[in-house]
Image (cartoon, rainbow, N blue to C red; front, side, top):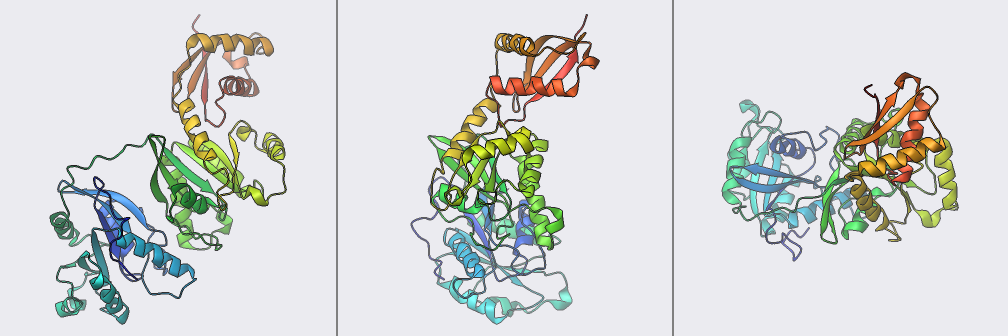
Amino acid sequence: MDLRPTESSRQPGSLPVVAIAGRPNVGKSTLFNRIVGRRKAIVQKEKGTTRDSIQEAVSWQNKAFLLTDTGGLEFAPKNTLQAAVESQAEEALRNADLILWVVDEQEGIIPLDERIAEKLRRADKKIILVSNKSDSAARDFRDSDCYRLGIPDVFKVSALHGHGTGDLLDRIAEILPDSDGYSPNPWEFTLAIAGEPNSGKSTYLNRILGKSRALVSSVPGTTRDCITETLSRDGRTIRIVDTAGFRTRDKVKEASTFFSISRTQQAIQESDLVLLFFDATRGFTKTSKVIAGLVRDAGRGVVLVANKWDLSEKGKDSYAEEFKEDIPFLTECPLEFISALNGENIEAPIRSAFALWENYARRISTRALNETLRQILRRKPPPPPAKISFLLQTGVRPPSFVFFCRHLKRIPDHYALYLKNSLSEKFRLGGLPIRIRLKEADK
């Protein structure tokens, strides 16, 4: 484990990075959540809960920094999932400006801590030793137990209850460089990657970013936390969030899996658009349909992504027929066919997302809307005596419209759906959750 900085370390003008390190189950994720002020990292007694490194921007005493939570270090054998977790943690530590090394005060210093200490001391890094779970004075171990590890900066805290974390943050602010010159690139929109387990979401994220950011394994449920990154294309920047594989409730057996699902639902709610991944070799399964329903209910635009297309024997046209028959609200959504593993067509979903975003904020002239309304009514008028006299756009993100009607109660739901689909088709708003409202016109 070589933690010396590399050429890939922090670039000028970016936020300084503070990484939390330590062996499993010493309270790293609890400390992360305490500092960021919300439950972003999943916390469980289950060993190895944290797998991917997750980040969050933090501000304290006019100092801004990027806090990184990493997986537990235990020097696992090569070619195992835990070894991959540790490899990603080591990469995060190499790129850190300051390391918060967490130990468990109630357990005391164990040989694994001493082994980690040996590696950390060789790194050219500033290190603060955080003695966590310092809740009971009767169980405190001697200060010498900490100082013999060779780290002079020692803080005793209770990440669970918040004791001592203010002093720790004060010290972090003292060490870190001034962040006045930091000017973040604001992203245009947030794009969530959602789908069932092993549909290739993390492989796609790594491929599109050009680096190994998310753990990839054949083990279902490898990704547990949501991973956030920024992606730039042609001078435009978006925020991209890789979510954990979604399972239906009847398949949830672990608490960590339950929290992963909750994080996925929250990520969909907080996103603007969603790349909905599914495995082309398995087709659009029941679980994929459940996720599609969540995206629709959240009112988010969606691009469908059929991954592992190079291994599928199914024709592209067959998917259009399947959606039209079983999932009509997805019929007009953009559908891209890719192979994340081979890098085939991987830019297509991003291009579709940008195009969808343009329509998401699009304003259509009242004249164009009412010319379209006349065509819609000629093709299929409402049941008499109902009449529709005017159409007006009332909002964007998502596009929202109002139809002014007479005898509104005589217009059935299926006709309202016809109006909505006709608008979507005419103005190419497929994939967006457009909203319509029928309003009784004044006499």
